[in-house]
Image (cartoon, each protein chain N blue to C red):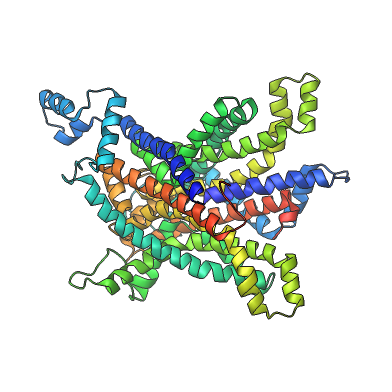
Amino acid sequence: MGNEAVVEASQAASSAREAGRQAPDTRAHSPTYDVLRRLRRDHAALAGATFLLLVVVLSALAPALALKDPDATNLAQRLLPPGRAGYVLGSDELGRDLLSRLMWGGRVSLTVGFSAVLVAMAAGVVIGLIAGYFGGWLDPLIMRLIDILMAFPSLLLAIAVVASLGPGLSNAMLAVSIVGIPYYARIVRGSVLTLRSQEFVQAARVVGASHSRIILRHILANSLAPLVVAATLDVGWMIMAAAGLSFLGLGAQPPTAEWGVMLSSGRQYIRNALHLSVAPGLMIFLVVLALNFLGDGLRDALDPRLRR
Amino acid sequence: MTRYVVQRLLSLLPVLLGVTLLVFLVMQLAPGDPARIMLGAHANEESVTQLRRDLGLDQPWYVQFARWLGGVLRGDWGRSIQLKREVLPYIAGRFQNSAYLMLLAIFMACGMGVPAGILSAVRQYSPGDRIAMVLVLIGFSTPVFWLGIILQIVFGLWFGILPVSGIQTPGQAGTLDLLLHMVLPSLALATAPMAIIARMTRSSMLEVIRQDYMRTAHAKGLAERVMIGRHALRNSLIPVVTIIGLQVGYLLGGDILVELVFSYPGIGLAMVTGILARDFPLVQGAILMVAASYVVVNLVTDLAYAYIDPRIRYGE
């Protein structure tokens, strides 16, 4: 799913560049200002951003809030339904507070999602730049390697990497980032190939700008839009994939409070403690939905012509 | 067209070789000595060394790869450590179960996604369209493993109308029983592709509806049903075919999660239990089979694309 989103985003942004060329912006505002202004009118994107911000802040503040210890067990209070005194969302099979575990779990899932995207994007950008800008014999070699990586269904590749590195949270994170690299590399290479032959880049070269200046100031700056959209949509995929790996027993391991792990152990009690199966999955779902609303909004804001 | 098919088939070879090499290397990097795992922790050093030699594990990696690849091509995919049986016949049977599940999921996804997309496009910006597009976002934001659990709760626990695990009821084996067991896992698996197909059909349809020939069809007084059914649908489905092909990649991954939720004995469940038991020959075989089938499906999608769109004349 992430793949299509990325491809879609890159297409959206490349047509955004074309639109920019065809109709020069005569307004006095900066492009960033315009994008933010358009984004502000998109209620779904705003709702998504607000919800995300709320989850990020609450997860970040989890240690400072007056919550129970997420790992403290209390067998006398096990499998409590939501609404009991001291256990707003109930307790799990070991009597741990579900609300506290959800918030601590958010720290893990969000950290994994965002850092996996950053790692994948950084590596993808470097590889894409090398392939697209310097080209030569490296370009076909890199592209064939990317073809091979993309010949694997994304989750299968992540599973293969975890199988090789061994189960664990950091390996799962690394696995989902590795899976993401080819998509970013392709987006960047595509933008570089288009931009490299454009007049302003050639002009920069003629006046003697260094490679690093051309890459940073001209090429990368103009490839940012598709990258931002792709990354926003991708964080959701990475969160889902990492939670999926944990759910399979290949990512975070119990007793870590992580949404996938919680769902996996919670579903053993599906008959007498429904909330344990519903709540962690609902969190993953809401965060991913918020990211998709925001990503869609960003794409529309970056390219108003594509507005659906 | 023949030339294009041959060209595409030939171009598959390096990709497949790369895929096998990658699968092989991934397992090489895996921690632990296969000989030690096979013999157990209490085996003495001598027998481990002997088994390493017998299995060829003392050879350089490229020799091992060539030997393994030769075996794969001859149908000898090794023996499962945990099950103590040949890998290929075992995972082939498991793969068949998974293929049924994915086929049903694709049918569900297309059967509901395409009509939903058409209706949305034809009534653009109507309340129905807006609701459908929100449902689409919900559809592909839902983690497949969670959706599986929710379906188990609703249809198994609350209504009790559908089986929630396994592939057959003991003593009631039959096609109907198999189908009933497949309904919930396929539905879970179909939801995200359904959403993506609906969205793609809608945007592709919207593009076609604005074409000149559609205006002509309208101007000559064709009924909307004929316009949409005969002129718009066929043309708008071309990009949808590609998206359907891409969804197979999602299905092959999501299938692994769904099989675990529903204890469905497919290749995904075999793979996960294999990884947790460090049964490397089994895992290697399962990953190879899934990846190879994905490569083949991509080829078929490309060919289907060339077939249904006469404007594309590949290789000419």
